[in-house]
Length: 129
Image 1 (cartoon, helix red, strand yellow):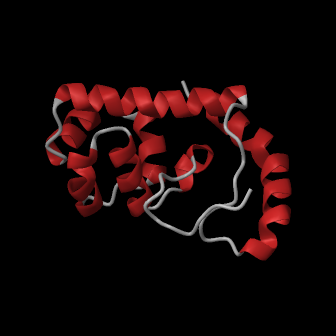
Image 2: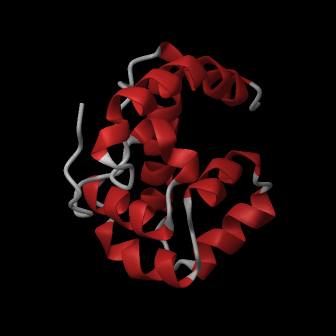
Image 3: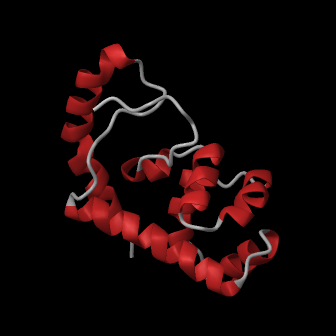
């Protein structure tokens, strides 16, 4: 499947841990937390950071909430949406799509390799507490 090159489409959930700061902003818009897009960008919140949030201790969570000026309910929404993506990945419900940055001539090769690597990605998600 070839994805349009428009950056205003939400990023592929299967690849959330490699999202750029811009991808995170688009995802925030998609889950109705777009008011935090700029502050997340200013704080450099990318996919790797989001993935690491599941390992945060209480003090780190509170620091993140203060730094991003988040309401507690919005933080809970953010965590629920991240969990939803991870669970979908574990169940294999996310379809593999070519990323926006990949040239169309590599679409077949990319999707084939991504499907082969899916299992190793899912295993890494299972290692989290």
